[in-house]
Length: 345
Image 1 (cartoon, rainbow, N blue to C red):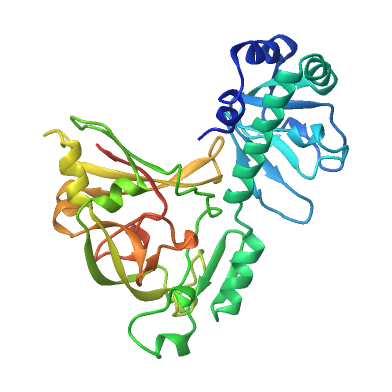
Image 2: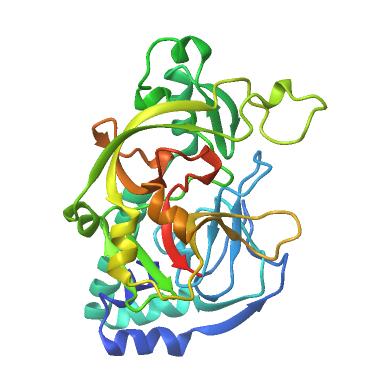
C-alpha cells in the first residue's frame, strides 16, 4: 500500500482539500536534493512522480529508494531535528510541498482535522516500523550463523565449506544469500502477486490466496552460476565466491503452472517474465530498475517450478525472498527471489 493511502484514507474530503490548497507542486531535476542530511527543513512532501535515492554519510550506496505515492519529511511535525538522510532525485521528480507552518495553522484551527491527521500519521509510522528491515542486523545475523559475508550492501554471503560437508539439507540460517540489490521491505499483509501480459484473466493474489491453493513440496539445490569464481582463469568480474554459493533445502509452494493456468495463457505467449520486488540502479540506467528473469513457456510448465513460501518447514525468510520462484532443476541465477509480477510475453 502506498504511504499516501495511510494518510488520505484516514482523512475526510475537506481535510484532503485543505492539504491541496496549502500545498504547491515542486519540480526536481536529476541530482537535485529534496532533503539534505544534517539540515533542517520546513515542509513535508508527497511524491507525485519520479524516484529519489536515500543515502546517509558513511555509506557509498543508496540505502533505500522513495517513489510515487510516498511521504517524506513528516518527522518535522513531531520533532525539530535535522534530516537524518539525503534524498536525491535519480529521475525527474514532482512533489507536493506542504509548508509546516501552514499545515500546523490549519490543524490548530480544526481539532477534528488535527485528530484525524495525527492518527493517520501514527498509522503510517507504525507501518514503517513493522516493515523496517535493518541491513546491519541481517548482516550480523548472517555472520553469527557462520556464513562468509562478502558484501553487506547488498548482502551477499556464502555457506562455509564445513557446513556443506555437514549434511544434505542446509538450515535456513546457513543457506547462502545472493542479492543484486538491497533486500526489499515486504509486508505479508499487503503483499500481492500480480499476473498480467498475454493472459485472459489478470490476477492479483495475496500470500493467503497462494497458501490456499494446492501445494507441492520437494528438495532442490540452488547454486549461483558464479560459484567458484575465485578459481576462474582468467579472472572475471562479479561476486568472488569460493565454493559456498550452493545449498539444498526443502521447498513448499504453489506450482507455477497452476497460477498460469488460472490466468489463462494466450496462444501467442512465449515466455514468463518474473519481476522482483528488489530494485536498484545499474550503470547506464535512468532511475531504478527491478531485477528480472524469464523462463520459456514450455520450461515454466515442464520444469516443475513452484512459487515457494515455506523453506525447510518454516516461513520463507525475507532475505531469501517471498515467495520465491524456483524448480528442482534450475541454476540459482534463474531462481527468482521476492516475486512481484510474473508476466507472459
